View 1 (cartoon, rainbow, N blue to C red):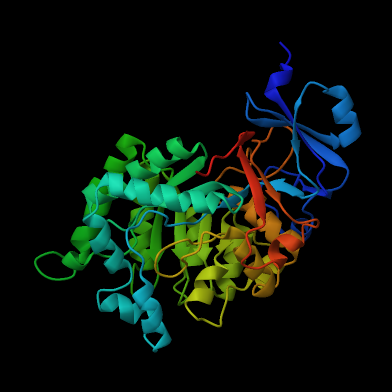
View 2 (view 1 turned 90 degrees about the horizontal axis):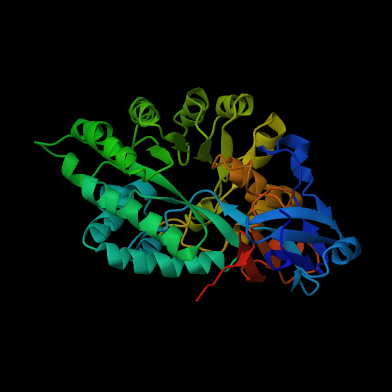
Length: 425
């Protein structure tokens, strides 16, 4: 049976269409320089299936499908919906007080040792109901979607107890259903060691056993997460502890991610590559050996330049060395209350260009195709090509290089998920 015209939508009158068309996998090296920018083309979408049917010359598609509904791009730039592959969007209050502490010279780990940082968000989240978390998350994610993002990874990790971690993951599931977009849930029970497991009679070993023996099986039973992540960092979880949690997660059927070598090099990138993690994230302190390990692996290097900027750090992840070495590089926002409180993913593209020295095309590939690969979705998301999910973002610019150029300004005019307009109110 042929597709009925009412189910067809034709996206026309775009100054440029950024297709990112190509292999259904992460792009590496010189491949990242090609964002598949085309002019004079339209995008035909099957709204019933939620997929792209064809990208081709506008005049020909108009003639072939005269009854299709028309989405006028008004001379803007049409691109794949952005794929934000690292966020911590479920939390309670902000942590604006810590920004002043850092400005006065307090370090990240010093703030954490004093009960601030992640521990502050843990105390706050544990006191909030599921409905409170849902309402807060809904508002924040709508603002994130309004900047052109259509696929979002969302982590737990501010509960650090069985009950509150499960509550967080249930909220993420509800939010995906309510928003009508793809939210990818990640269990991050190993975000920190809770304060109550740092003094007798309970120990960090007791907490790791809780993660392995109770939390992970419960998450798996309810099907609440696609990935398991661990904050592998000197002063948080050691490489040995991280391995133990991740191997237990894999045994429960979860794919793996890793907060890796963010502030200090601890060999986390090598661990991610060895375990076949889908992504290793942060990497501002990665070693040459870590770069080589990622380049030889299928693990995507997800870089979070907004975090280092907000922390006031001068050293960013070595994006150029990673790309030159052959690693697949993605960009993500790390949206969280303490170290990257931004929902503006195009701003992260700006930082990708200005701080990481990516080209505009490399930044766009990193935020679409490679972001999808960092979520094991590169076969269905991240490019405007036949058979891919019709997630689109329209930007009020005339050249794709303007998307990272107008820094801090939201130039996203509209977003579509599965071919349908995302409702942001």
